[in-house]
Figure 1 (cartoon, rainbow, N blue to C red):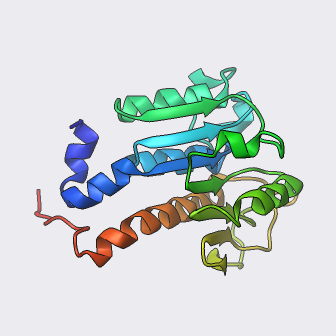
Figure 2: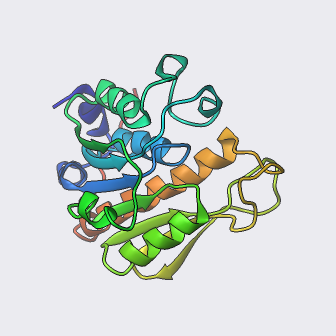
Length: 216
């Protein structure tokens, strides 16, 4: 058991840690949403992920994505893999340095019952929803996280029983609403939380999620 999992043992039961370790989460996109979702899930005990993204880390990504100056010029999936395995050497990662299309999506994520959509383009979001929402155990998407200081509140919606959508559904990322860390990372945190809640639901029903917590 690694240091991270030993620490998580303060908060989670053995049954909960086992459920998290056994889960396989797919993440489509490794940008502001996907990279942060991956890091949050890893910190929460998820050990098995499949991640796809065709992009290279750029200096303009550093304000909100889980990368550092030394990563600039590296493929996002490779840089993210380094950070995930630095946090938890036992991570089981499958990464694809390519874009997800209608022709390759099913094959890339066939083994992932839990899927997080973390892409930018609206047409790609629609395509992925059409492909995966009807069949996945859990499908998590996001919309509306641009700008700062907005009155619109981030919420979770359930358009169908196996789908969670997060965001304010009002403010897209555009010239007037740039992608900035607070709201992008808030949306990513809500996506990660939806995955965590889904995995732990059965363990909760069995009464075995929480370990005893004592003060340091």
